[in-house]
Amino acid sequence: MKGRPGLHTPVDTRREPSATTVGVVDYGMGNRRSVEKALEHVGADVALTSDPVLLGECNGLIVPGVGSFPRAMERLAKLGLDGLIVERSAGGTPILGICLGMQLAFERSSEHGGASGLGLVPGEVRELDPAGLKLPHIGWSEVHWRRDAPLLDGVRSDVAYYHVHSYSCHPEFEEDVLGEAEYGRPFVTAVARGSFVGVQFHPEKSSLDGLALLRNFVSSCVASK
Image (cartoon, rainbow, N blue to C red; front, side, top):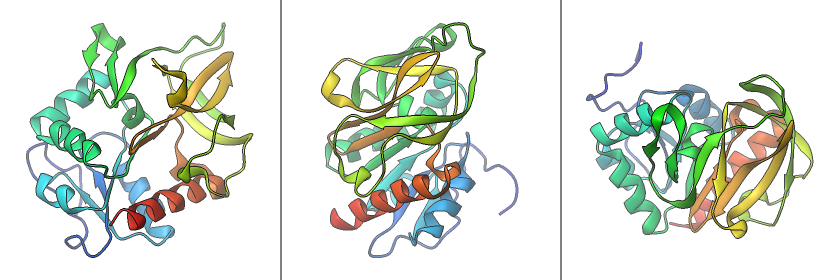
């Protein structure tokens, strides 16, 4: 299928979910195709779609995204995907947020006048404080894992992952922090709460270490069947 999918037109680039399928939430913003390809590389059956019915049948969901927080929430709401993500998270479905997808899981953001998020993680998103460095933060930064999680099985700490962002997440509770990186000053680059895990960096663009994270996420989806 060529071109960007229409906002109100469900898009399914793969067959309907089989025994174990990871759904990539397609709301028309960001890195959907590269995430899909990376998941296929690690052996996942992928449904890249904006159809709530198909996403409701998947064994796990990935919320990707690059761009504006308020605009992303607007598009999710128009497609009826905001409530779906919240509902599936409450039901224990594994969900991975990538970059903007991680930020959307928070209660609110100050970007462009402010907007409410999905509320999966208590806290807010604010402009990154880079201590005089230029924004956006674009490049490779080492990630230090703060605690264990299934996503990190066999994954090394203190290796670099690819970041592109101008805003950072501020969880209300320390126990939700999974990993930190630094750009001028330390910032939270990974969180985990309940069935939701979020990473500020792009695992699909972070070589073998990023693929290892995605492989672990797929394994968590298999285990949740």
